[in-house]
Length: 207
Image 1 (cartoon, rainbow, N blue to C red):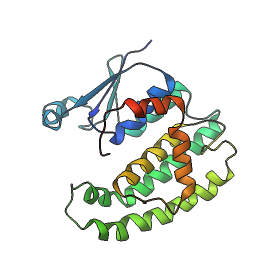
Image 2: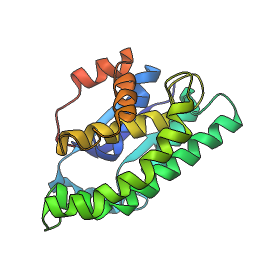
Image 3: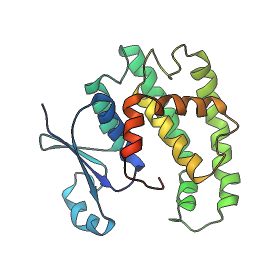
Image 4: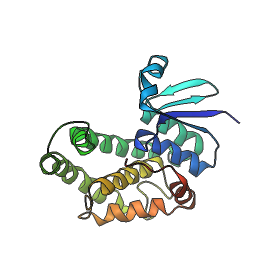
């Protein structure tokens, strides 16, 4: 069996989807969590000066979406065929467009960027949410027979979406209450036995 090592900060953040893929697959790995003060020393040793970083038998794979796609394909959570795989990739791209559109809001939300949280919620988050989430719901969730976004089983885009909903509902209570379909989807994903077990034991963090 390959040796896997995932390096990231002691947060859910961009690495949580990878940890959940390992949990779903039941595959052991090293979950290396670094402190912020250790990052300046580690940064020059990484391929792109960024985290998360996955090492497979010592070979590095950078970039969070590349890591997620690699693990999902390897573990069987990237679609049942090439059409499903393409649909999953398209949804991931759509969600990433949404996140890019309101990325400055997240900085304000967690205190990295100065600004008024209430104003940023109204001006940045809510317009992006209301632009993209009706597409996700109407085009995918309402047409789904399985309760998951694509196909008959959970895939990595389900983890991507559910993780975002959990984080934002935690930081902004009621953030997605107007979209009960995505709340129900998140609950369905987090009720999967392997995911439920992981959530119960993972280190606590604000995001």
